[in-house]
View (cartoon, rainbow, N blue to C red):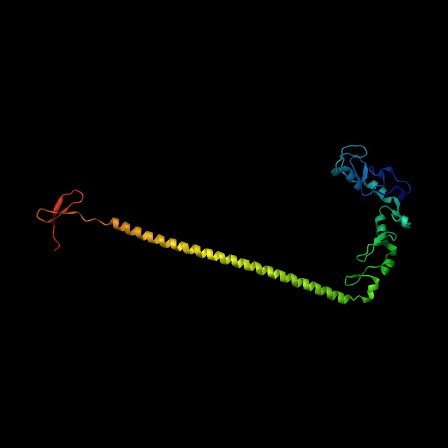
Length: 260
């Protein structure tokens, strides 16, 4: 929304009026078709439309630009009454200087600075309100009513708050310590279980290695026996002599002398 037209003194050019709300431009933006709008007005319009609200030409938010410089100068020079005129402010200033005035206007409503107080008063009455406000913030941060001021001791309040914070901190530290101990115990149990499993696996491997070694030795012995040369077969002759024969041909090769 723009500035209400009846707040201005003198003539206002129609080119400085918003094409959406009809008020004097506030934070103005301009379309390629040179129509101007309040920034908030045109942004709300383009949420539901894709055309200029004045001539219906296609318009996208990315094509909006700041107002021409000469138009901004004319706009800034307009004389406007303070927004707090209904409260009694008689100030008239240029539109460009309006924010600076209203930030310090004595007729503007401001909130009470005491925590817990929701009262709003004119800036010129704030000091009087604070002197009798039912909620008063002290140096310790406490909010008290006027009838409690004489009994209130900031030092004791701060000490009490410190003790409360100390207790909360110790409790939190204790909780963290217990949690860490629980985690460490869980890790120890896990490591002990893994150690037992590894020991069992190593023992099994040792047993398998021993069995394999025995099998290798047995096979080696059998291979050695199979490679030894066999003795030639012997037969008895007619005269009772032991004869030797060649294994391959079966031919007699002669008698074998008795070992006796």
